[in-house]
Structure formats: structure tokens, C-alpha cells
Length: 245
Image 1 (cartoon, rainbow, N blue to C red):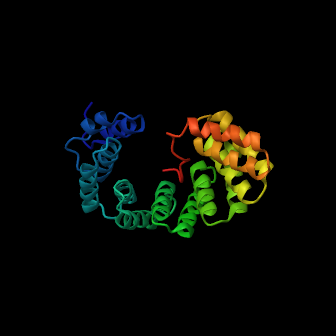
Image 2 (image 1 turned 90 degrees about the vertical axis):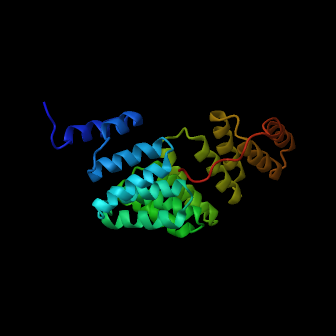
Image 3 (image 1 turned 180 degrees about the vertical axis):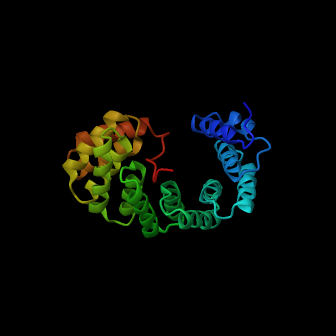
């Protein structure tokens, strides 16, 4: 059976992208000039790390369909990966203007604003995600990170607790929760949070260090030395990550 309008090819290409078969998606969309096909090609190229080609596809898609929010989104995403935050912000802002319910565009826009040091604007973008998708753990977590950066530890704790209510076994969230509790001088609770985090990820140098500091502040010197010994053994490790990409 023929497929003169290319719809079947587009559907197969979309499935290929969804299942991580990016080379197959490129083959399926060869020669297609439909904006949807170009966006799929751009997405596949982005996932393959072929960023300049992805941007070329986005430019062609937007030349054909300047009001396509997905083309603006993928362009903004690729520019974000390039750390071209100014251009990324403009593309993503256009995506959410055209499609206010585009949760991914709001999320990446939040990451762009966070990277630029615009914490309050980043929080606003992450909250826009939740307005459309209330169960979006990475947005909840990133709000917590941004609030903690602003010294709003009680509010950050609320966000981390919402993430843990969805999935209680995320060591990074537990460790960050411990940091907030320690900043609020709730040291026994902080130690408990760090301990649970380390049971899940015993190679988290930062959690060992922060737990040691909490023990030391409580005068628990032996426990502090035990934690700092683990830090020495793991000294090749970096600290916990910030916002989720």
C-alpha cells in the first residue's frame, strides 16, 4: 500500500525516536520537507549529539511553519545544550507563547533561567510545568534546588518532600533535604536524611561530608571522624548535582 502523504512514515519515525532508534528515524524522514518530519529529524539529531544539523532542521521547519511550537522548543533545547542561553530563552519563550501547555518547554526554560542565575524566574517556569502536569518530579526537585539557593530552606523542604512522596528512594533528593535541615539547625533530622541517602548511594562524598559536619556540630566526634574517613576514601568524587537537566 502506498503512503502518498507520508503519514505512515511520520508515525514510524515518531515511534523510532520514542524508542531511541535515532538512525532509523533519520532514514525514515530522508527527503521529507513537512515541518513535523523536520522536527523529528532535529530531535533525532539532537539525541545523537549532531547539534549543528539539528539546528539546521529547526531553521528549515520554522521557515515553513513559523508558528510551530515544537520547532521552537527543539531549537531552544539544542541551544540550551550549546549554553547559548540568550537564544535558547527566546526560542523557548516563543514555544510557550504558542503552546502554553507545553510542559517540556516550560521545564527547559526554567533550566535556562537557572543557568543564567535568574532563580525566581526559573521557579516561575517550573511552577508553570506543574500547572499543566502536577506530577513532574524533576520540576518539583528543581524548585527545591532554586529555593535552597535563595536561602528559603523551609520551602525547599516542602518541594523535596513532594518528590519523595512520589519516589522515596532518590538519594540526591534525600541528601539535599539533609542540607536544608542542617541549615535550619534540625541536625538530628539532617543526619537521618544523610544516612538514608548514603544507604542508597554509599559513594556520595558530599553526603558523607555534610553528615560529618552535622555530627561535629552536635559534638559527636567519633561519628564525625567516621564520616570524614569516608570522604577521604572518596576524594576523587564530585559533589551532588544541582538542577535536573
